[in-house]
Length: 160
View 1 (tube, rainbow, N blue to C red):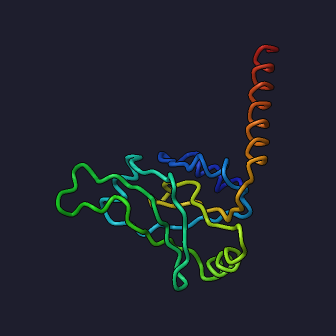
View 2 (view 1 turned 60 degrees about the vertical axis):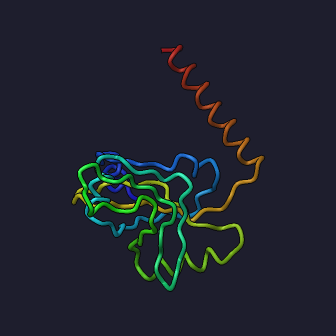
């Protein structure tokens, strides 16, 4: 991911993160995919009413799908409202899907959504990561590093 793309993500008015993913997995490779949504779903995402808790991606017949993503029903949507936890199709190139499919056939690898954001054209995008699960001692190491960073930040504030 280049600096320009990273800057656009930070400017996005909506950033729905999967905070547990970084704790549970090592990120091997990252991809950005479009999401196929209905009208009330995109309106709910723009209001920030979505969650990536317990989401994962599967590849079915050459198409990649996100499962378990929760988008709250739109308040003003009448009978046209969407289901809260339906499977949603993701848009990636054939080459990217083939690479992900071959990688997930190896044991221990999975595809996890890490971020949903709105791009400069107003479309919802999702960052995916090819991940390998962490062991318990890796998770303890991650917590230790996080605590060390906090300590250093506190020390720097006291120093200034």
